[in-house]
Image 1 (tube, rainbow, N blue to C red):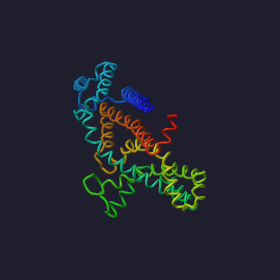
Image 2: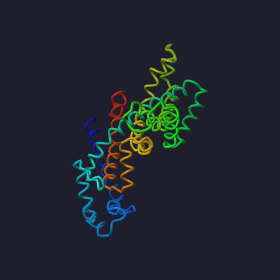
Image 3: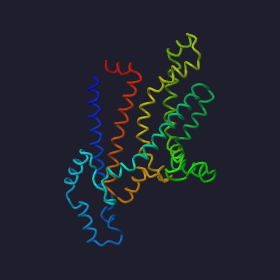
Image 4: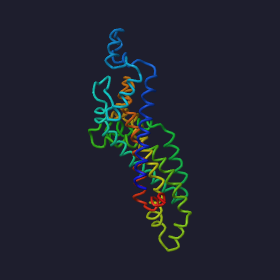
Length: 308
């Protein structure tokens, strides 16, 4: 059953990548604007624009360009940037570590903050209202607004943390906090609902009947079980963190994949945009597979139950 699950997972991942790559290719062909005109410059005449279009291969039939590009994707080759004249996979490889660091730090913060709010809401009735207000606030405020507020107070006014870049110590703290807050609210709501159900279940009642302290029941027995629905949510949120880094990286001047994406959109660098979309599309099935594997590893009874 494990081999069948792996084969099914790989087939789903390949299908997702194919659909994402194909849809991104054709959708980007119909958006307004001429990439050749952008590359040639505002002062270029029609002859120069036409030569640039030919050098970029945009004069060839659409289906020919598609099959050439999709075959390259199957080999791990994402094309050549029209603007920077470098392989797209190299540009992504240079910027991806910064984005992974930011998303990983933000994911850890969202998990800690979300579980903390869920524990407070479940342990104290008065904390439920406060937790809900914090969740609503995290959902309501846009990430760029939170990023600017954090930047103003903790960097400009107080000078505690660096404003821009990744070279100084602590440069990832404020971007990670701005990115983590909405995801912490999602984790909190999921964990809070799971804990509420577990607290009313037979497992908690039996543990209390055996005289186990309430705090031990809560932290040792119930909280790990509450993580079962949280892990798949974290996997989905990790993918959104990678995509959501675009705005946060721009605000804090981080040289990651988000700023590269924004620059490619402004310059209409179609191969680079398509390559980044493929990378984002690949992240979601891989992260979901990792979450499923981790759930099966930590709670084997669930895995055996699914196999039966």
